[in-house]
Amino acid sequence: MIKYEKIIFVCTGNTCRSPMAETIYKSMETNSDIEVTSRGLVVLFSEPFNPKADTVLKNHNLELEGHFSKPLKNSDIDENTLILAMTEKQKQSVIEDFKDTGNTYTIKEFVGESGDVTDPYGGTLIDYEDCYVELARLVKKTVYKLNEEENA
Image (cartoon, rainbow, N blue to C red; front, side, top):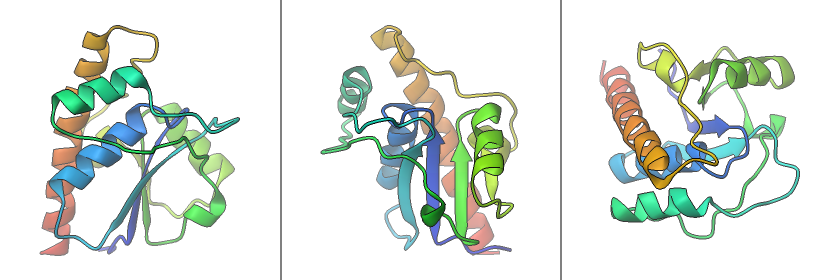
């Protein structure tokens, strides 16, 4: 069983889904020494966190301060890094374009589900809330799974 030292949540632009997942994870897992971060696959220039996603996080008493999008780089990844992408297409991009350590999954795949996390970009505040609810459920399952593996 692999002991992960780092988790990277990956989405397209690193302005919504992956930073939300990072923030949710950090709010749930407080006694772990795993480094948790988020990155994007298409980051042409650094952008701030999406305002609607920020509003949704604040409605859940969570905050992501000072976040600016960052691209995924090979230097972010080693054999002890778990990469959780939001979609199958993003997972395939990571495997094809970066070091493939065999630790790249969609977040749903990692917790035994199928499908993609829908991108709320351009949608309503309710679309962002729906995305948050889905991510919170998936991240909670991720935390449970990692804790089970660590204590196995």
